[in-house]
Length: 145
Length: 145
DNA sequence: AACAGTAGGACTAATTTAGTCCAGCTAGAC
DNA sequence: GTCTAGCTGGACTAAATTAGTCCTACTGTT
Image 1 (cartoon, chains in turn brown, orange, blue, yellow):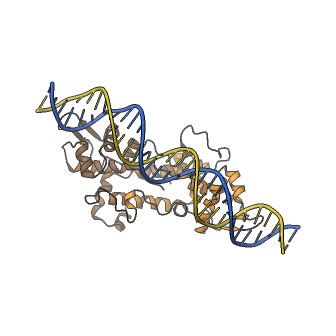
Image 2 (cartoon, chains in turn purple, orange, green, yellow):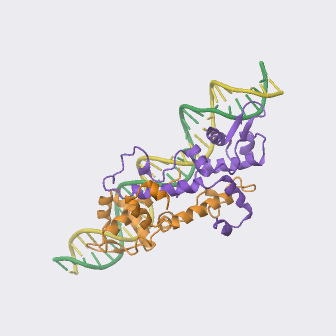
Image 3 (cartoon, chains in turn blue, green, purple, red):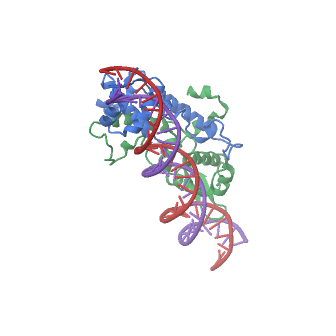
């Protein structure tokens, strides 16, 4: 099944929660209990998200994480890159992969590359803003975007 | 990692191979050895693809599978549906899923639904023809499509 | 100095995906 | 008619990935 993993789900949840706190920092504990996700895992997720600069960490007592970007500036590609590394929609696209048995007569590397590009493009053009703003719209309207 | 699974990769490979045989049937054995993929698995893949009508099976000696559609008529959504069932980009989108811990205050079902729709649309508009025709084009040109 | 919190490595458990095995059915070739 | 190549499909095993836990160290505010 083509799907986005839990880390990304949790990351999106947490960022949306942070956004609702405006300029205040929220600790991992607070975010985890509010979003209903495992604390230890969310901690890892936030570390990675911090590394791409979407949030900053505040150490010490009453510390936590703060958003450093607006929802418009955060897109799914960035989140995915932070939590999962580069998008490779098929194994044979991995750099240095020499194990592909169909290498010589391969008719699929390029096709999969096309798909890969399309997905990257989709993720890049999908901002958190875009995802979060849909709450009030019906699915039907959403598909017209 | 967001990726398409082996069954889909193998299915695309096999369908492109079948296309190259024009109207002749090819057995699973022939396809498997030409595409360099496991025979037993490809056999399952072809059965599923048959069930959505992209190919027909010819029984008996010198039998095999034949394409019943053109590459333009076959899209990634159909192949995915055949081999993987409906696309659900996040677990909380599964029908009847009541285990989501963040259910009551969930801010992510709709966002993930938006993404889901976008991916479905992308898969639906990506035909085999479109994928296979890119062989000669550079990746740069491809992204402009 | 105490405390609340982040940082991050190592590990285990759970789930999913990939792949195999085998017995049965189908129809064309002889 | 019977042989045989090949499709059908269920049950099973193995491999890989993903999810989640645990523990120790570091950081900075009060």
